[in-house]
Image (tube, rainbow, N blue to C red; front, side):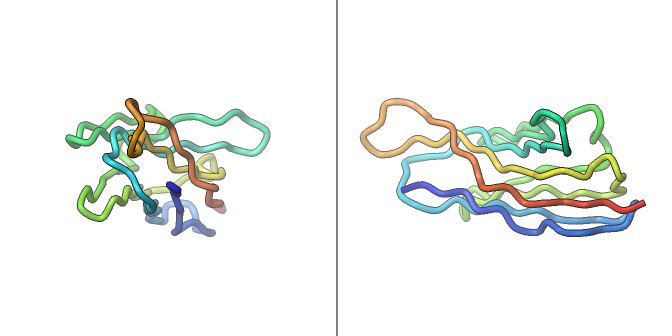
Length: 121
């Protein structure tokens, strides 16, 4: 059974930093693209950043230059370093990964349970 578990959320003052982590556990063949999404209160879930297995990154315009996504392929962990945070970054942050399990021909999408990030002004 594959699981994604986020950690590192919490309360931070505007301008401060947080580091989110997402650990993948269970039995699987490989992990493809990984990413972080967020859902602000009353709004739809949106992509924050993604990273391929080879390290190619993609960022939402709203976080470019402030957030950094990275991954540790040996430990199956993806990180989101959040710097110079703003109140509009307040949201539930979700980890996402494309994972190929044993006896499955293709990659399937998995989600973490989410972690709350609150940025106070």
